Amino acid sequence: YMSNIIIKKIWNLKDFQTTPEHIFKSRRQALQNLAGGSIALAGLTSFPSSVFGNANSFYPPVSNTLYKVNREITEEKLATTYTNFYEFGSSKNIWRRAALLKTKPWMLTIDGLVKKPVTIDISDLLKKVGGIEERVYRFRCVEAWSMTVPWSGFALKNILSFVEPKASAKFLRFETFFDPDVAPGQKQNWYPWPYVEGITIDEAKNDLSFLATGIYGKELPNQNGAPLRLVLPWKYGFKSIKSIVKISFVDKKPQGMWERIAPLEYGFWANVNPNVPHPRWSQSTEQQLGVDNRVPTMIYNGYGSEVASMYKTLQPTLKNSLFR
Image (tube, rainbow, N blue to C red; front, side, top):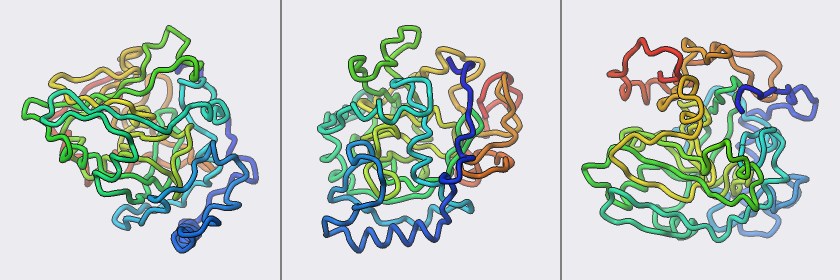
C-alpha cells in the first residue's frame, strides 16, 4: 500500500550521478551515426539486453528539439532501476523480476466510441502512426521524487487520428496487462487489478501527451513500461500507466486504480501542484534522482503554458485530493 512506501536515497551512491544534457545528446548522435551497424548499442550498459531492450529499425530516434528542459538528464542506470511497477512488487528495485514479461509480440486493442476499432501489434502500430521521435521531459512522482529523461514514442493524438473517435467520446480509459503467473504483484487481491487509468479527450489531444516505446535512445525496458506506456509530464507519475494492452474511448470518467483504492489521496486529475499537499506529505519540493539537494516543485511540473488552459473551470478550492 502506498502509505508503507519508504524512499531510500539510492542516488547518494557515487556511480549514480546525473549526465549533462549535452553529453547525452552527443551520445545519441553517435548512436544515430552507428545505427546501421551491429555495434550501435554494444557496451552501453552492463545489464542484459533482455532487460534493457534491443535496437530495431525505429532506434535510435530523431530528437524533437521543441521538447527541451533546463535540467540535466538523469543517469540512465538510475532511471531504469528506480521505478514503481506494483505488478512486480512494491519495491523500486524490480527490474530483474520485470524481465520475465514477454513484450513481443504485443497486441494493443483500441475500442469503444470510435469509428475504426482495431487490435494491432505495437510494431505495426508504429508504422501506422509514422514512426517515433525523442522528447526530453521532466517526470514527477507523487512520492516527491523526480527525474529528467529522453522518451521515444509518438504523440497520443496520432491515435485519435487513426481510430476516429465519435463525438460522444469524452474520456480515454487505459488498461495494462493482467498475468499473475508473470507478475507476482497481481496475485495480491487487495489491489483491483488490472491497473487502469484515464484522461479526458482534451488532455489526449494536447501536444504533450505521449505514448512512449523507448527511453535513452533504445526500446523501453520492461520495468519502465515496455512495450507501450503513457507519459503525461504535467501530471504525477501514477497517471502514466505502463505496459498498455487496451485503450477505450468512453463517455464517462474512468476511475484509476489508485483513485479507487484511496480517492481522497489520488484524484482523477493528479496535476502537479506544489500548493496542494498529499495528505501525508508535502508536494512543495522534490528530490531529483542523482542530485543531493531538493528543489522547488513547479506548478504543472513546469508545463503550465501548455496545459493550464484545460483546467480553468475546475473548482480551485478542492481539498484532500490531487486535483489541480
